[in-house]
Length: 266
Image (tube, rainbow, N blue to C red; front, side):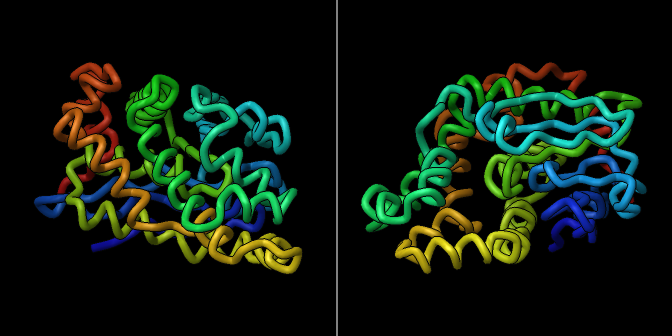
């Protein structure tokens, strides 16, 4: 049971390589091709040899237009940027909007998101990751980029690198044949990195009267969030393979080449 390898980047938060994760039959995810992280607004390839060594060729940005405008990615030299906005259909709703509001207005956040409503908003977002048209389009783009033969290393990210990115990693691992326990371990493993990165922000929010429970719901990684997505996938499509075909419209050859590229046999 393993999770992704944290890459100690000076300028990119929560950067991980999914390579090395165990798959059935002694296989594993091939290192150096599927990378996940938080946003790249502070990336400095010149001053970040750890990042530079990854040789990222494609960056898939899963964020909303508002997030991209506020914190534009610095794309590494020679890399191609793909915008795949998961929440385009949910604009102004859900946890992403709530998060922005929470930071600006702790009292308003308490009113809107107190009493367990913050976690509820995140569960809603996770269901939308599976069912909404924009999310299905975005994850189709992501998986297609990862399946691209000769495409080199792909880095996908959202803002914190935990929710939209976490679901992307989950879908990928399920399609590569990982069991649910492996998928859960990987999903939850980013929690410490996310908490560390957002600790100063959460402290400011709480100091200004924000409810710590609201901050915790928004800035943590929880099994219940992943369950919300997995449950809706199982209910409507049965399994990840059927979802990839019927829900995302991925063709057999894309799924085959995804596995060829990313599965390293024993």
